[in-house]
Length: 462
Ligand code: FAD
Ligand code: MLT
Ligand code: ZN
Image 1 (cartoon, rainbow, N blue to C red):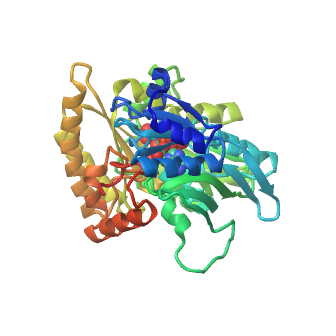
Image 2 (image 1 turned 45 degrees about the horizontal axis):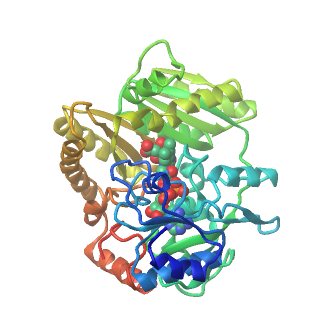
């Protein structure tokens, strides 16, 4: 640790854990994108709000860029440090601070894993309903910074719905306590919501007060096989009409093949082009009868061709694995990820156009579709052929993403539904947000982070 600038930092925060070990720089300098070579200046692992504040003030004095870092499961390059930044990992700030049974809230440090929040809520007979496959590694701070969605948005909404209060160290080094857990607060601009989805560009979230929900009802899981893409939204409508849906997730046979190659068990004897995992409130015969009625309606209409309903928790978990295992099973193909959304009502028209566009423009690539179809959110992953250099592959994918962004703009959609803009989608932000909006975003960033030290180069250029 020879950099003399660190002396001032360690004088201001004597107990601060700071490392420049090569293995640490590599470990903390990248996220799941793996597209950039990690090259941070150092990694700081603060254990208190005081240390975070000292870090931010020091970074301002020395004009050093900060990359806030959670579990680095992000898929947009938001936590990448490839340009001599200081990575501020919240991993040591990972405790539950308080539970309030009257407010039904949990106050936590930002570095706590999502799974640990689920466990803590369950211990108190409640649930924290934001959920997705990276639950064991991603952190609440990262979830807030990306406004993470996941598999239960259809029922419970995004992370934004569950944040009752935030404690934040801004890019200027100020400590803000936003909304303080209030349910009602009509006292002007709600700065909490500016921080949610800000991708580490405005400040560092250090603590959060999370709303908790009634425990989830007993549920059942159904896997449906579909003969065509066109009927997908009609199947969704048929199930939603008859059941309290907790999740409605879609994937293609290509996606399934990758998960099966990864060790999962085939759900049907025959191969079908498309699949849906539907989870619905169950527990009494009436729900199961309604599920059966929805299934039979779809079968009669030729919208589904087969189906299986879970008979145990273990079987439900097995069915979920077919959907949740997709990201990991694709990872070794260095996928180029598109994470797009349109209003659910615009989904059929968008789907038809996007499918035709991608079939026309990507004939040479394997394209894997899956996603949270009930939220109007599709993940379109293009797999890198082994023979193609990474840079050429990304170049080709980006020119098609430009067309996809234009299609989305025509349908009033978004180039990032839930992963964030980060580095990977920065060039396409203008298709989703107007020039006036982007100018306001820049102005907000200047107020909260006047020296531009917070995650520069991510989300938008300032
Ligand atoms: P990181 O990757 O560490 O960081 C993400 C962004 O948040 C960066 O910009 C970073 O600078 C910023 N940040 C992190 N912590 C803080 C903080 N304390 N204060 C301020 N800024 C901060 N996402 C979904 O939305 N839905 C899904 O269904 C989903 N499924 C996934 C499944 C798998 C298998 C994987 C690998 C990822 C998945 N993701 C999903 C993406 C990812 O898990 C989420 O974006 C998650 O919210 C990132 O959390 P993290 O702690 O890993 O954040
Ligand atoms: C998912 O829905 O599985 C996640 O968003 C991860 C991904 O898109 O790969
Ligand atoms: Zn997703």
